[in-house]
Image 1 (cartoon, rainbow, N blue to C red):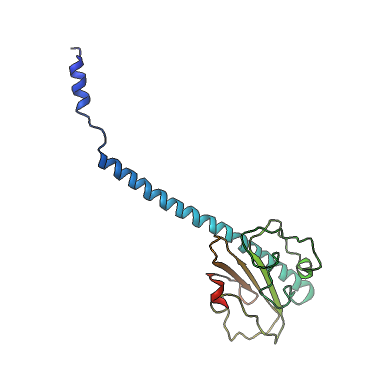
Image 2: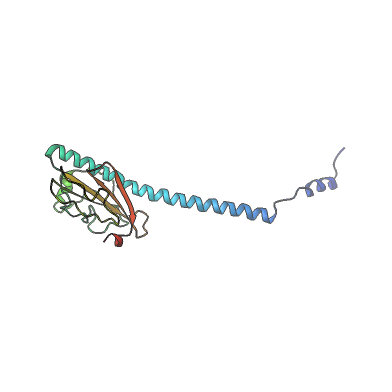
Length: 195
């Protein structure tokens, strides 16, 4: 039996669309998912920027070990000062710096250490070294050093410190590596707390 226009209208009127409440629930769920997604993306971006520092610190560590294998001592590149950051001239900030600096006279230790970094970097890096009986350096971090304060120095040593602001919020991230341990210490903290 063929359908008439009246029958077709009745069939469609029985199917209702979405109510305003259902639409609002869907919009709220999409909003929450977007907020979570943006937060996770931001964390991923900051983490990837800190990944640069981890890679460069490990390259400095390998260069120090290579230098010691050839010379029986580690190289005091930053002249005992963990606040003299390379390749920046001052405070590490939001800019990227080429690892190879044109003024080789100002940074002779870094040229001699020959760290194989080919990318521009955001963090600043410092590394100091010493021998048996030399005092350990003070870190610019807010918390205690990643080694025991009573560490007895019985062989040559080095300390590497990286400092940067990967999420550009004014709070600095520090990474510290030493010849005492294979660990990499990371701290997110305000520079004021460290002084």
